[in-house]
Amino acid sequence: MSTIVAAALSGLLWLAGSGLHPVPALTWLAPLPLLLLAVPRKALTATLVAWPIGQLGLAGYFIRTLQIPLPVVIAFVLYGTALAAGTVVLAVTLLRRGRTGTAVLAAPALWVLGEYLVTLALPNGAWWSLAYTQADVRPVVQLTALTGVWGVSYLLVAVPIGLAALRTRPKPALACLLALAVTAGGWATWSLTRVPDAAAELRVGLVALEQPEDGMPLGEAAGRELLARYVARVESLAERGARIVVLPEKVFGVDSPAALAEAFRPVTARGVQVVAGAVQGQRNVAFVLGGTVRTYTKQHVIKGLEDWITPGDRDLIVDGRYGVAICKDLDFPELVRGYRARGATMMLVPALDFTGDGWLHSRMAVVRGVESGTTVVRAAGFGRLTVSDPTGRVLGEATAGDADLLVTVTPSARGTVYGRTGNWFVLLSVLLLVTAVVRAAYRKPAIAATADR
Image (cartoon, rainbow, N blue to C red; front, top):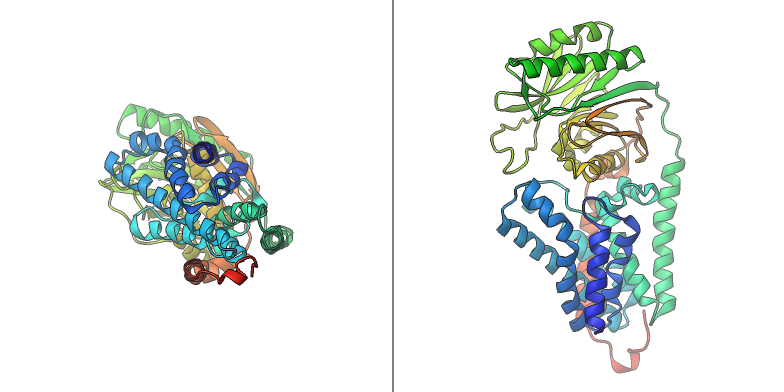
């Protein structure tokens, strides 16, 4: 009965604490019922049931929205199940053998490495991580500026292991939890109280208007009518002080940017830059309309849905400060790190999304900004319009459809440890995992079995 209850409870907590609209507090609690079982065999059985329950909310999104083949979805759920089961069993085994410190501080490395392997095996970047569940919890997400998303995922596993250990070995468990709290809390306090480098304020605008489908051809009446509506909205933002205006991804279908440049000329002639997403032939592009027309081609396309698109291979930095990317590009931390290393302090991002995933995908972009220390201006045609600062504060947000935003930003020139060093925490996790496995395999002598070190 305890196994059944633990499986059901953890499954429901993972269901509510992950997915498209997670409740962040529940993510921390989800593994706890499994860890409290204290018997590896029972913990394994319960986890094999709990994780698939927790993935039910995403299964429909993968199959219906992203059109991922059912066998691939099943394989991915099985992978997550194996990873969760391995992590829980490793932690329970260590706790059972009195190795509390190793269980709390080293066992979570298995989950971290499992997440990282997904970024290597699949062409989707760092899109699969528990860390995004905490995107609106700014003190927690500050850790990504030090470790990337891997440090947040580590905490989300380490804390419930520590809580489970309080029942049998309270002193070492409390010491481990205190060490984690001091380290993560100290970093968050320092990050949130740092004064950013002085920079001039800038007003940015975002617009996402309702349209029946993406890539409306400008050669058709519906496309020209949509362009006229966008021009009027951009002119309104410019009159209110916007110096840069970002439109969504794939708004128009064009043969060349000439018609767009001409339509927005009354605005760009006043020094306003317009970033407009469009489909040009087999390319998904963002045109930066200003004194000249600069073109960025999306580098990371959605496998399956965008196989017809030819990806680009070049970054674009405007005025030496503003990096341009498109939607899925921001699922890749290394792309934003590269922009930041070359001096970009703000990302201008036309995006699309799929309505239901508006919160989740916008928050992935927010996390990219925290990781590398950049302001992110992102307009999604079927999602959300968001502007976030380098600490993850959402400065402005609206739901696409008939929406615009005008936000004052101060693009910071402050870099981050993660932006400069990359995935160092993954290497540390390898060492931690080796330690955990060795300690789990070694049985203490009977005389020492009651002592914890």
